[in-house]
Image (cartoon, rainbow, N blue to C red; front, top):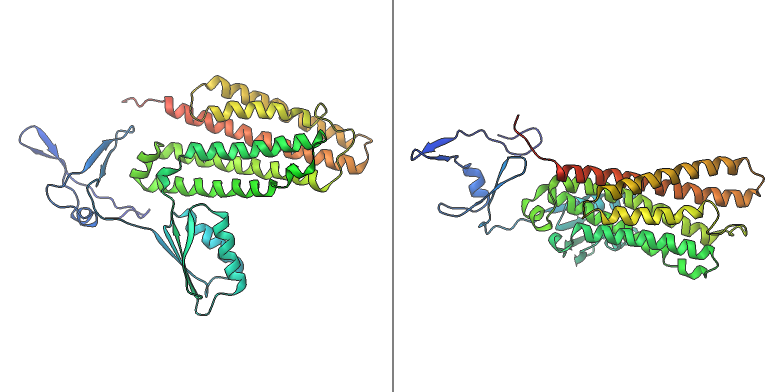
Length: 348
């Protein structure tokens, strides 16, 4: 029978055979769907929770997820959202079709989507029917590597912003938009991979990340993506507005940037290692920095600084404060992960 969640579930009795061996029969439908026959081997894993998982290792059947998008029933301004949804669903092939030839607007949406993701290519374009296929093997992109890449991009944005404040050429901010797009693309890729981990035991094994931990890493990735939004906002502010002459790296609010940088190094390094004291230190320092920024913003509103400069400083402070807040969330997620890693199940 099938549960309300759509997953198959059956109750089977344990049989005792030969006086010393316990057996459970496998559902015939499951055997047929995996192309198995009598005497084929299956793998049984004993999960940390105590549950057993049956895996059809010897199955020769290959399954691909396919999503179809009908442009006749989807408004043009919603097509991109449906393509993202198909990507996050883990689709290996996306078929897009229309009764008439695709418009220029629709074709541009398709190209923008391919540029915004990782591993997708247009394989077949017939004017009113287009196919995109995934060339990326999920197991070839470790989650930690992508997360570290996101962190490096965000850190580079903040560092470039700091250097511009010290008089460096504004040209170093020219690729800030590209870095922001890459952060977004990595976030989508990681969310897609996490979804595949939740559905596939083989992908879970190949990436070496449990389903529970993958769901926490997905939360972490979203906090990084939001940090990326604010790091880009800082670069955009410096590019398009005059920097107050009184602003220096030793003055508030930018004087707190090194505290964020040091804290993030500790947090990112603890995605793999297990030094919870470093997570505590990072979170404590970030909380203090956040409080200082709140106090600074209150004092700024009561100061007699020129309105133009005050607005510039306030926007810097707000973005840094939000970056610190998301970093605090990251620290809490890492505490969740490390606590789960260290936990043991005991029989009651």
